[in-house]
Image (tube, rainbow, N blue to C red):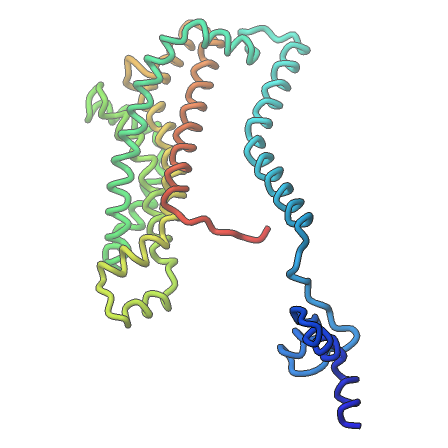
Length: 318
């Protein structure tokens, strides 16, 4: 009687005994998983866990779906750009706007192709200013972030000043920079680095402060030195934030270099825009804007590629 009652409470035991008697592999039934987790027979309304055993066809279908999703992610941005350019082309043509008011993308691309060597000479100068200014901002920004993170007094003294300097209009500084730094590379490099400096500092400080204190204490309790804690724990954990600041800083460095060329330059895409405005050449002006945008996008993608090599991906539910 006792055995009959036990078997009626746990009917999956009969299936396991039958499988064992025939030499088959016994797999846990959903009811057994509930019994192991809760110590009781699952009620009739209890949700059954999803079976981990998938057929080969289901796995192949899932892999195919993931591949299609990855392809869609890769072409999303180019497809959106193409749609916007087509809408611009068709809208400007349908509205009958002259090239002086709004050149079409086709006319702008045609102008770039016709005068490609000239655009490349000026783009090379602007690109060099952006890269050098960003490099200076990255080195000084990380150094400043380390001082702020490890010194409470330095943080209280310097952080408010940095925030105040960030609110100063950068265009207002450009004439003064020409007076102090001359008419050469100085004003462009300073503005490019100055605009990129603040986001790099803030993102680095937030990344260093965002490390789990329990992890740091656990590593310290195992005898790790401060140097080992920084390079093995804090820096790897802060890299996503640091590269986020780098991406923002690179975009701002492009803006800073072009602003510097507006004030003091004889070469560069900003200087080319000024010449186009003086000659009322809207197509040349818009072509310069196109190249500036392409340059910023390429530099951003280059940073994203470097980030993918050094930063572990974080899978998040969306």
